[in-house]
Amino acid sequence: MLRFVNYLGLAVVGTALAGGVTGCSSTVRYGDAGAVETTTTGFGSTDLQQIATKMVDSLLSFPPIVQVTADRRPVMFVDTVKNKTSEHIDTESVTDTISTRLLRSGKFRFVDMTKVAALEKQLDYQNESGNVSDATAARRGQQVGAEYMMYGNLSSIVKRDSGDKDVYYKFTLKLLHVQTGIVEWADEQEIRKTAKKSLFGI
Amino acid sequence: MKLIRSLAPLAAALWLAGCATSGMEATGTPGADPEFAKHLVIHNESLANNVIIRDMRTRLNGGLLEVNVVLANLTSTDKRIQYRFSWFDDADFEVEAGSGAWTPLLLNGFGQKGMRALAPNPTVTTYKVNVREL
Image (cartoon, rainbow over all chains, first blue to last red; front, side, top):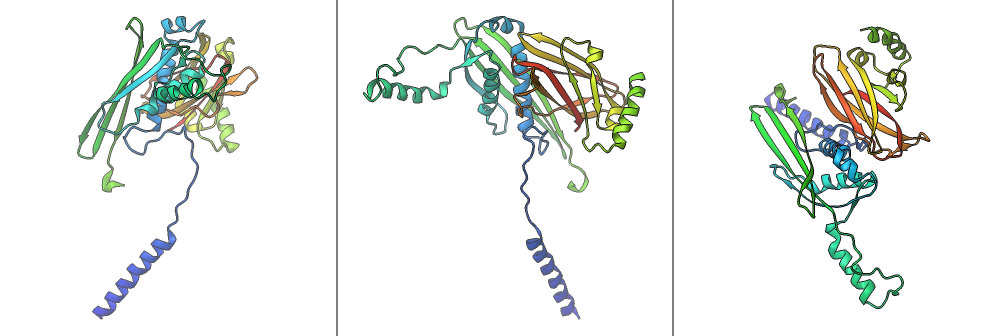
């Protein structure tokens, strides 16, 4: 009788496992890239988009910047945004979104300091390889110097209490005038995210 | 209160018509009378009864359209909502289509909050704001 029960148990487990293997199928669907994402308290796409939008809006509506960009498009370069949080966050992705939106606003232009070596190589090729006609070769010494430097910090405070978690992010961005060293604009964006672990982890 | 009463039949009609989307949508054009320019389409009766658009203002800031839409929570409980701005040029083409992201917003009980945004470039002449529950 005991053996029968054991066999029956094994059969039930085996059927369940087989059903699990054959019955599970993953479904891939396209979602809205702009949707609010609340999977975890970690830095996510909604935080990135929110920070970028607020910072760009703040910079472009700041009265002294409105004045400067009224009849010309100043040149800017983006320095780093230091990640001071305990998470791995691609801060270059945040500054990429900010610089793209600023550029597309038609108010600022950018020089890309991450491409200086590639640009130098191209100038060498055009001017020294002998393969490019003088008429079309880009001349040296004609690049435009950046007037402003953008840089910032991303920090966080994380608190835990049993199953609850509270994460506070603070993103600070500054715009420095290269020639005078004066910080012409700065702003902060704060984000608070909380997570509560429900009963039985459901 | 008067606004809610006036919007309730519209909300009910839309609910009966079987609107599937949840949220509300408002469009505005700068320069027009703010009251007149308000065009409110409510897709969700329960949300419309709890959260209303109290004010919509626009101005030009450095050649860019700046918008401030004030949302008010009519209930005593906090409401978690999300909103998204869409921008249109004078030919009614969407500007920077697909780049707008939903922004989460916490509306405290009986509180009100402004949703402020700046148009992505000077070609923008009108805007639309969508609000829905989070």
